[in-house]
Length: 521
Image (tube, rainbow, N blue to C red):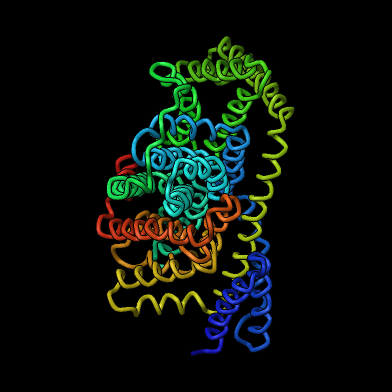
């Protein structure tokens, strides 16, 4: 093996070793990369001048408009969490299904779908669900392993259901890899993969996974009814029309917000970044409605002004100089009303204490993601400078089984890396290395490959012993739930995940059908 490629292998080993030792991810990636760049330069295996490309790459990351969706989606999810909208959802769904055997567990999964779509961040989802549902499930006699496993697995749906943060980052990396693969094949006007494409591709597999979770819980409720008993009816709880009204009140606004955000992306009305901005504003308005003692007219004013403005825009051309001067005046007045309503709603949210905590949490999470991304950018630059990408390309091409063998090897490697690296690290470090050679092979659909990777990364978040979801759950679970309960309880859901990967392997249309129906191709 040439010296440069040996250094590339040793660099990967050093990163994995230091991560297992507990060193910070971003600093490990950056520090090891600089050390091996120096070694490569001294040994004559790499030109240190290659690092001059790093500032331009970092600038490209920070000016990437797609990545602007990350802090906006995080803001939306944290704001919904802080305003306790998630609690209402879980309590209402629990009343609706709790009287059935296993009904509370099924309610957790169904609400988890809504929270995953609203939050897009696993940590926030698992903490929210665990704090609200675990005490209730234990109080009503649920098996501790089933309760812990259901909560942990449901929280990881935030990895695969749009608008997951992971899908935004993965879509950006896959697009870069797809274009690089086409350029290598001599296509100098390459196609692209948008985050919207990956969102559409992930919806059917994600919902299939939800269906498998529910089927498993139904089977447990039938075969082991003592593990998931029904909740005794509460004589004081609302019934009939009162329950339906409470359900509509809890569900309508969050579901409408999610539908607007995802729908505008999927039908091409807005980019993911624009839709994320709408979601963030919508979360502020919903939070303002939750503030006790505050008036609701600012929210009503904002929504009314926006709806009328959208209707006028759809009916008339209100651009300046296009003949409808009155429409321009009306549009400006509506924009002023909209801005005033938003400002007053924001003031209410700030006074209630929601805004400061949300902004702080958003800044912390966003800083963590982008710091890791910068460290991974340096890592990939040095890895390529040492010839690592050519080595990986040759290794994948020489595997028996062609493209299928190469993809299986990459899936297995990503699954094993999930023991020591989280999803963000794998996306930033591994995907740019392995995706271009895979996409250069015949018969590999980039969207199908992306969804396979996303489901695999979701598995890495939940499988013992180092799944981050398990650590989040351990930190907030009641004392009677031990680490053993969590690890044993999650195993059936890990098996379900692997079954979902197998189904997706043999039925790729689950990932490719919806994007083709929406966008053609």
